[in-house]
Length: 474
Image (cartoon, rainbow, N blue to C red; front, top):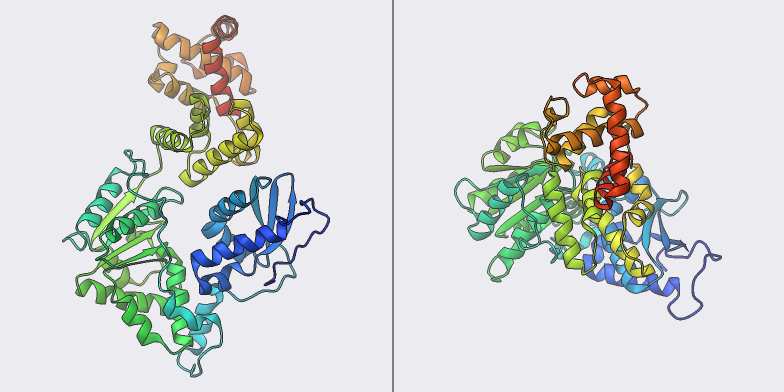
């Protein structure tokens, strides 16, 4: 069954028609229909079914490269398909299992191309012959402009994407180059542009990752269909290439992309590219390609702010229909700061857990359900970090932590920061006092006792302090 044998016959599974094997067969069929035969046979048919234990389903792949690739490109979809298929699957974990049959993926194709591009004469019998029927991957209907949460870090990139979607090939916007860190929304904006342009039915859009571009190009060479590949690619109205940094070091593929780029721009077609760095910082790309990429509109998506992360979580929680307390959203927004994709994944896990076990989402369940994810974000707590978090929470200036101001709006947060410094660090009272404007250790003692007293008297205040402690402690 295409390497899909169940490796753990002793794992718990229902003894009926909806067995793990039957479910896997349905999931694989849906995947194949979604991604196409070529892509499925190259990347996904090597997945081997593993055990289902305590709601966690394990899927195996023969190499770390394949595992990482499938995880980055298909893990979310695998999670969704399995959960829709079986109520007892809470999550899917991709692992490497040595000794499984391995089919050489696209990672090795560039080396083969360097060795035999000129000498290859016979068509290959591999599924790469089907390249001409699988030019671009489908656009994700979830990624639209309406579902994109806009904030200061991404508002310029969003505006540029909107402009290109409304008027492709506008002067100064071709190519459109989007760059930023992982999980900040580059792919979302590209899919949104594609979805907007294809609404009319009069615009042809090809979207693919840089790796898939390489894979399709080399497949065309092997099958002696390079002219057909070039004609098809250069006939589209809009070409979108995601994660261009993958082409670094792939000289032959860069060469083909450069010529495709020129042909499309000269013909007045729109090109949209994304990468993790700006064109000038992508060392390893040919200078002529880097120059052409930078000649249009370059838009940076900055790291998210706390406000933007809260807005994203609120929008996702509202769309899910599950009540998630505001303090839980604040906790997640403080703890997971670098990757929106991971932030949304954390919220999805909480919502799925609440739905499956029938319990409300609380701070306690959040820490329990997400303990593995939160652990990765743990770090040593410093007094400076405590001061910054407390100042942000009560919307005061960081300098107020060490100032002489005694207004309650400033003094109370300062006392909370001292209290947390005593609770979460190993610093002595005099050391803590020095960090708060050279205050005496007795001042710190008073702050600690006063905050403890207020926490017993005021439930809301106690929740605020507890939220801050959890965010800082993890």
